[in-house]
Length: 192
Image (cartoon, rainbow, N blue to C red):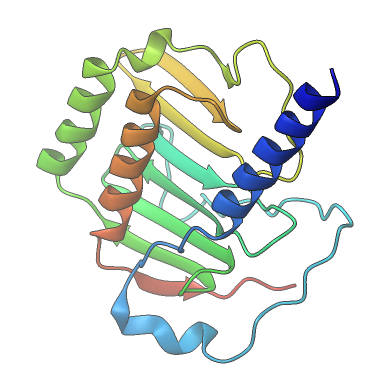
């Protein structure tokens, strides 16, 4: 029994080390000066999440298509959120440990959007469990990745804390790559 507890403790430490040492994705090389030099101080106190301003040129016909959000950990994990809307507009908010801190906007092509939906279909995204680990307990210090897709009247959000299948992790990477490949323009700085 003692060996099992040591093994679980060791596994948790390894997962924490891997999760917290992930390198933040590059969003755009044009605005690197926004976060140059100063790193925000971390705290274990829970801070309310800031919401993305989606009011910019939205009307009733424009809706959310896809999003990805990286939650904080107790280390230096990237914290950001990116959303894609039906009019092709994308919004990115960089919060901590990313190259771009602030709010940015870009436009995606229909071809790139189609690739996202095709990949979601291939991994059967809409039939994945809502949370990973599926039957286990979340590890609070690991950063969760929250992805969502809204397509043809269906909506699905999946929270990946750890132990997700390879197909979901690859899809999350595809979402990150999709947003990284857009040309971002600063629209507002996050006020703290």
